[in-house]
Image (cartoon, rainbow, N blue to C red):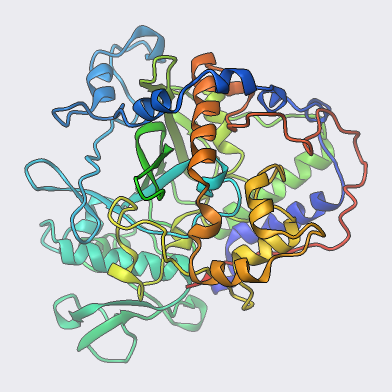
Length: 497
């Protein structure tokens, strides 16, 4: 199978169909994200800038000694969180110190690698732009076999090469690496037909035509033994992602940065291998279910302790602030919130967003760094595979900088009164994405305050978007089968970087 057989592409035509017309279960004809219709103006106005800054600059993940606050709580798990009543926490236990070295690897206080590695990426359109509510980061950790040489010893160089191989398979493109002596691993990484020195991982995978790729170290042996798998567009079983969602902090120069306080800590682990055929069958099953039982809602399997399944081989788990601002496990219902984006949409790669958008291996530090080490300032705008600038394309066709078309700051900054884009701003955007992605200091504080109101209400099941006033273009109800008035369908393509 070649590069076009990713099962995610199978569900994209269905997504395009829904762009033109509403076809929803009866339950979904009413907008249950009722937090969108609340006016929080007075509650936000009652919070001073000094108060919100003190709040977001307080670390709710680690205490002053560097210990994980949530882990201490989970070691004596409260009964309300113990879903299976066995007296212990059986879900993900935080183990990342957010202590990154020059290569983006997380280190323990003793200097050991935790396996987590931070990477820089182009924030996904709209929701994940800081100007719309949050800063965030994403880390990846491959299974232990990918971090070991063939003798079973931890080897950082082996791990770095395997990460580069995964990157090539996910992006379906060559990935530059520091020079590597191929003979010691027995793998022709640059596909030049000989074992010598490789400066890149060459993407060339077409098994039906006899062209294969290989991991190195113990991971290579596990693939050969049928204990692990390799395929384009799919992560190895056991791959983990850690995603912290944070408030917007502002430094003295007015630059946006990650706040110390986390809104959420999201975790994903791939627990099962799904072949292309299996993933395609899942997508076709969803289409058939929609046709045969249009009012039947999907049942999501899982619980608050061990997370929920997206049916595509991944378990999703998350923690969120309680009313006092400490992280707590999300409820089952709050977990289901995550499944919508990490299941049946065509914008993901193996159910994930960020890694396919990782900065190029030709970027600074080959794209392996945390946003606390280098921020978005000066990062050039990504281009789509068709040559269009991606963020500009979004602005042109959306007419705004967010899904609700409610971010007036972006509209005023980038659009003329007639709805056309301002050429000077677009030129600036091409050279520096922060001119679009970063809000002003004033807007950052407003968004922080609006979200804190939701935290104190603990009303996450009604929505998490930090809106101050109700967005004008969000419907409270819709009629089934009515036209969306969209005439031209837009297809997506990953950025070239």
